[in-house]
Length: 382
Image 1 (spheres, rainbow, N blue to C red):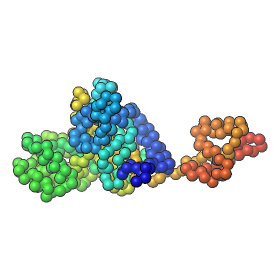
Image 2: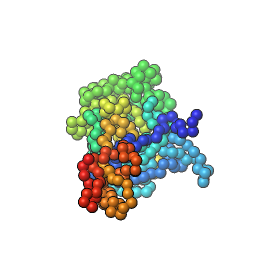
Image 3: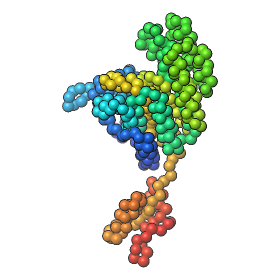
Image 4: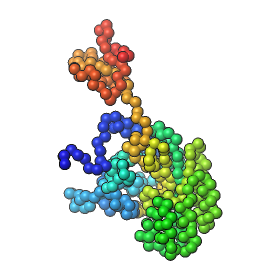
């Protein structure tokens, strides 16, 4: 095997795509700032016990592990940034009121999420801590949609669920953790036969409710059907009411519901959402409420947010056009260098053409050129 062959699902990013990723990263961070979100930069690796505290087995299996040569302790390369931001909110900021935080950085996965996914996503996310009301859920949803808008995603579709719906059906029922994980997997896969087998020893009302969830997906009629077929409870009524409210606030966005959706990380505690587009085979954005995420850091307070992979987002939108640039000759004359410096100081891209390589500028669209006219350097359209 050649020394330059990269591991599976790890890839170099070449100029045009890298430019698109970087421009989009800046656009997303600017959009988050417009909403009042402050940028934080958690470290790529931490002590393993801190990185995996409270995040469950799913994140453990996705985390690369190594030994710290300074301390001898086990360390992990983060597979998700949300637990780190929760730690920052709990211990470093420790604000009593609302904290709006955003981030953008690489995460590493031991296995790809989908057959063609990268194991090195560039994760962008925004999280709001300290407010338990639906106002926070709605703000995060609207920010997520605005982020897709600035990325020029066409016709996004929001799919919604609530983690409390399944929990309400299991209230008071003792279930082994292994069995519960298998049931969650069957629900997410909508495998009715497997779910029927797994729930055969559960109380009839619980079993019938779980089996009904497999069919509860579609438009707003799903919520009305859920009220009819699921065992009523205050938790269920609150969850369905919240979903109705959030959906009603999203304007022209297409909204669907999948009440059995349990995909993603295990820390979701309330309304959750995924945003899809026809140009992508999987969700571009996942998010929701995860009020328990900070509990393991000694500060249990409301939290809601979302994340996306900037690389996957770039793959779901049209390539951006080449940047307009100014072509300039290469030279050592002080007046030429001064003219080039002045143009760059005004934010222009100036590409100096090396002698003999006049036709090799590819990453920039040179629509103007710097030429000498009457003893002065001036910019003319090509």
